Amino acid sequence: MIEYKEQTLISPRESEIRLEAWITNSKYLQTPNRFNEWSFDFQPQTTQDLERFHELANRFLFELDWQAGPYSNKKAAKGYERASGELFATQLFKPKLNIEHPDEWFWEGREVSLCLHLRDLPSGVIVANCDYVDGFEDTETDAAAVVMVDGRPERINDDDW
Image: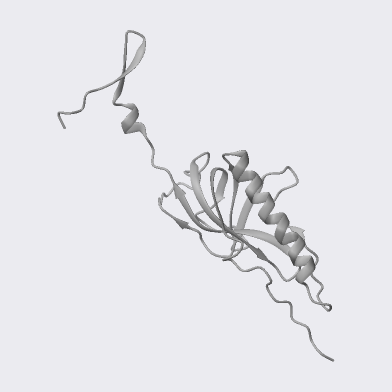
């Protein structure tokens, strides 16, 4: 009897997508959960980014069914979206972060730039993996350079620096 081994059909290079997003749940972004997986929930900042993500994912849901061999048991399914519609990334390795912080909730609600790619599991479930999370720096120092004058914001002349 010939044993059939499932192969990954989606390559990271062709399924890569970059988008701007908010992190909505960052509990397992810097440390793994009990299953030794890193995961986080995110919400794309624009409808265009959301639409691009769903178009890419739907393309690979279709292609996975189309490319699966005659002996394959793969059934394409979404593994990147919760029942509530929230998107999430999950993986067996820690994504590269441009800001390291000891607080696990540091990333919660932050604006970030994400580099994601899709991957299919042997069962056919398509998951989103994150290559890197590029968090934007706080602009509190810029906010301090603005003062209210006669009820309207004015920038402080900081030529003395």
